[in-house]
Length: 476
Image (spheres, rainbow, N blue to C red):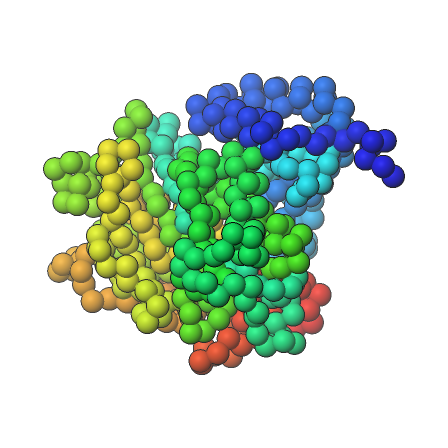
């Protein structure tokens, strides 16, 4: 059937950027939810060229799920969208499988039709249990409630920006084929900042950056990274929920663009031994009444005492929350000190091996950078655990806490043990969700060789939570 007969929505990249930036501004200004809902429903009703709405949500491990609803059905039934929670790893048991999806109308995106298809728009959903309350294992909802309460009680706005590294490999589905091939094939070997115009890596970066720009990411810079075929595409700060949503969209966009180019975008933390791994450096700050309260021009490294207290609590709970920030078997290959790995539980303005770095900043950009985060971690869980620990956690009575000789685990089994034994992670997640998460990580670990060894094993890719085949997993 010809596109002319279909007449589905297909906007220019410039039009998309205007729409997405306007929606982003509404979100930033905290326009009342009912006003945004009314506006979006009217837009969907009036825009005949829209055929479907893609609703996105994430499971406990951070894997993105998408459901397409017919536009007319969604407009009539947006308050009663049910789905089978028992089909989602880490959600409900079969006997209590019914969950609902609410719509977060503020998290509404117009995507390029050449990437997402014509006649579609995207919106993030909120998982709701049978009682009509936010579902405890939906970490997006947990983070949103936490951020809302802090704004109501203290006037705080939690801000984040993530530097997400990844690899581009030749061929589609390179991760799924890894058990057969035993290797990943680079598309570029230029290295840091070096990629010729028009080569596959540069073309991928340019195309992905264009899509992000159209979707209101407000890009800053992009470049090849240190390892062959590695990339990083940076964009601006955002309020914490919008920032976490953008991480999920960033990875989705990268994968879509790469697939259309006959390649694979991989966010395995260390897919190739012998070169630098991929991280998700997480830059955070807190503002109040429009002012960055991490900034103090007279403070140590120009950080306020409030920010240093925040850092001290993160360092105190570094081992407790390591599993949340490095949640796969493969992530512990990245925590290798030979490749600038941030595995030291200390804070530094200069040492990139530190778990926490204090970047150069001014009143606007002053921030704390948590470096020991893998790009495959659940972004909502990562940001919740960092902000909650930094604000409400304990401070260890350790001499010279910020420079003490302590290290993060070098394997997932130790990380799981630390996580299970920690009283702080119980306070953080509650006993039920904590146990579910630990059991998921244990199951993944037990399907892989216990010792990492010197080369990437097929199982650590095959049973990775962002890669696994559900049919294959269920055979165990």
